[in-house]
Image 1 (tube, rainbow, N blue to C red):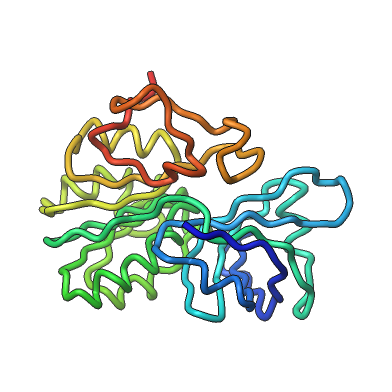
Image 2: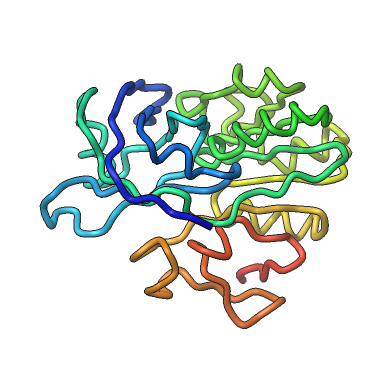
Length: 251
């Protein structure tokens, strides 16, 4: 799998939810994204602060542009939010193992900032004529985004922990109460949500995991995790997408 390192120009920055921003990058590196679920690693500054690149999931892409969504949670993402249109970012692109499209009815399950990586996947599934249902989970109304985008693919059900939008509860509560059936599910979100999905639906799932990454291309081994099929997999190379059948539930 070929990777790209080079500059990408910021062409758009939009605030889409509470401290959540959508950024569009343009440049030759966009051609190195080959499948939904891959990620890019961004060098925020030329200084040592922050020292490490920041891995960002990809919401959408074509031959010229990459769209990322991030939440301001620390120094790196705060500095990224303050970038201006026309500035350029040093990016590593074409990283990770993404989602494999399977035939049969699909359920997309997004949790908070895990929602964006599923958007381009939804596009690809729709192009194949696959029936799609989407379940999105957020903490509260101010965190909600991308609902209209996912309505392009089919039915969308929302869960919020406080009940301010959609059904009160978790994504699993929504799936069970709505009696949803599916042949395959694709998901990204916080690890407790992913663990719960594996417990309830141990087969036919593809789960995208987050991890702290030192390098982003498998050299440092810092994002290794135990799986059933081998001693370890590196989230940045063999992941971030893992099969539900190989996931070891924490706790």
